[in-house]
Amino acid sequence: MSRHIVALTLLLTDIAVIVGTAVIVWFLRHLFGHLDPTHYLRLLPFLLLFPAASFAMGLYQSVPLPPPCELKRLSLATCCTYLAIAIFIFFTRGGELYSRLTFALAGLVSLVAVPVARHLVRQRMARHRGWAAPALLFGKPHHVQPLAHILLSSPSLGLEPVAIVSAEHSTCHDFGCLPAFDAETTRQYAAGHPEAYAIVVMESYDEADRAHLVEHLSRLFCSVILLRSSTMSTGNIWLSPIEIGGLPGLMVRQNLLDPRRLTVKRTLDLIATALALPLVLPVMAVIALCIRLETPGPAFFWQQRIGREGRHFDILKFRTMHNDAAARLAECLEQSPELQAEWRRDHKLRCDPRVTRVGAFLRKTSLDELPQLWNVLRGDMSLVGPRPIVDSEVQRYDAAFATYTRVRPGITGLWQVSGRNDLSYPERVQRDMYYISNWSVWFDIWIIARTIPVVLHRDGAY
Image 1: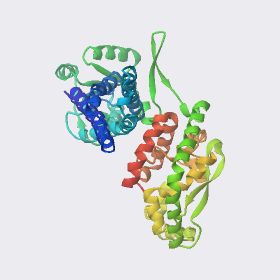
Image 2 (image 1 turned 180 degrees about the vertical axis):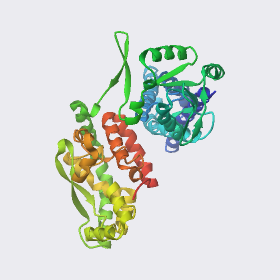
Image 3 (image 1 turned 90 degrees about the vertical axis):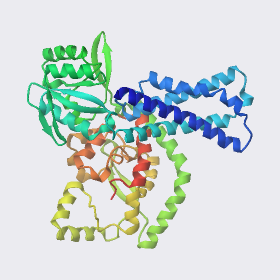
Image 4 (image 1 turned 60 degrees about the vertical axis):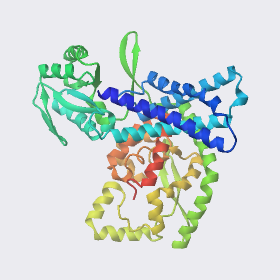
């Protein structure tokens, strides 16, 4: 039943949000000038085009699409819905009966409200049994264990592992033991759970056995997923299915290594920064005044970082430390071996003696990053990108450093919305590589949207 529960829940959510948004915007506009409700009631059925388009785009399945891909399809469905309304109004010559502002606002608000509502519903419903689809994991225990860990720790992925099907004994992992099914138990389970998925870890089988297994599972399960454990361990690429002359394949795209896409990203950075500056400059002036009032010294400071093509540039930030920060750090590390280990591990201290009171607030809220808009305008940085690093961090990036230098670092990024300082250093590097490998305009939009609640909740910030 889980597939039907997921589809019905998301369908009702979409209808409630798309209709509710239109009604609320109409009502607010009605307060400032009479709008005949009978004309607008004629357009309500058109709003049902949204769930119809979403269904056609595969947005009601148990396993959600990657967030940027889902955001792109939801936006396309919203635009198609309001475009259909506009075409209807045009051909019925009813333009003078309707408020253009009402439709523009309803469409814009829906672009934000629908994905936010779906995200909140998924986060809440993922806690309940029956939301995620059951999944049987096929492969050797040491291949299946990382997959079971991922699925059990991330219920929002929409798959709940229930058993391992392997010639070996059942396996244990951090979340308990999954039972082992034999062939007959697997057949009975598949017959009683038509919504179940079969997930095959491909390294566990040679080519002939794998082909035979997939053919057999395709007769038992509606959905069979093939995974490589090597892909799970790196997690850096999105793979798109492709067919060439009847031969199935997987395509890997490196979007940020395409000069044309870099030009698009740079153009969007300039437009967004120009729009944001009038709102941000007064806030920056207040912050600079607070810094000067607490401690003597400049409100800003420059720090050398490594940017695109390995070139060094000076990053601009609000000063968050005392003027004698270096001496304070040296004294603190000399007195505490635990802090020395923390500093060597992360190049950060959870309780940093160098940070001022205003600086601690700025770091918690990430407001110390606002001056980097100047670096975006200069072309040193992007609004979204990998963390800007210093020379001492290059060796920790190892082979990934060559990929890092192909793009501009960002003010925010996947690391910042995935746990920030709560992540280990290798996890930070992995997030940077994942972003570079999978960049899209929608990925940037998703990260910026995720940045707002992360900053407000101060997740992983210190």
